[in-house]
Image 1 (tube, one colour):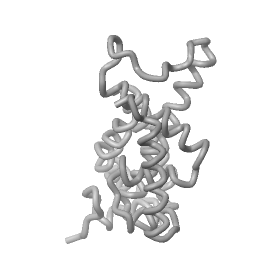
Image 2 (tube, rainbow, N blue to C red):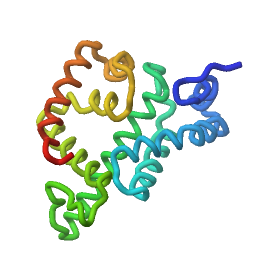
Image 3 (cartoon, helix red, strand yellow):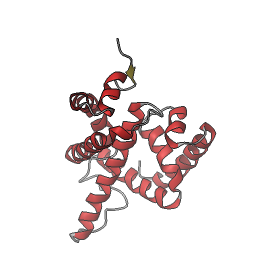
Image 4 (cartoon, rainbow, N blue to C red):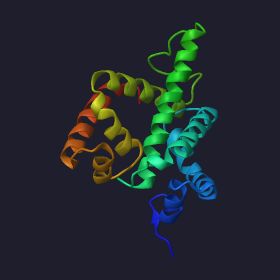
Length: 185
């Protein structure tokens, strides 16, 4: 009986996929797909956008699984990739809108034309972008903890920092985000 990493992927399957076993990789991707879609959906307001980001994340997982070192859980590694993919998808969408001459996204979503969930996600993405511009070192720990629900110790392992540093960075990010989102939620 093999052990499972958090997220339900058997450890031996991850080992085989990392070693180049195409069938194991396909099975890993099938098992993590629902997790990846859920993670991307936490960022992106529309199902189609989350699906696009999830597909990009799955491609990145397939291309980089050999680089997974075993530091932190496999589910944590997948969460990092999914979160980054969702944020990159959002940036591409925003840049595409800007390139087409679509006006800037409004500071807050218009409740007459945007669902509450979509509006709060857009506000979140905008606030994350501002946070990254002012305090880039705090974004990843914040995203992994508050959106990815990873434990502090795992975030420390994934970021190569101490648990104390992780807690400090998350606190700083939460303080910034609270102020940035005040009045939008």
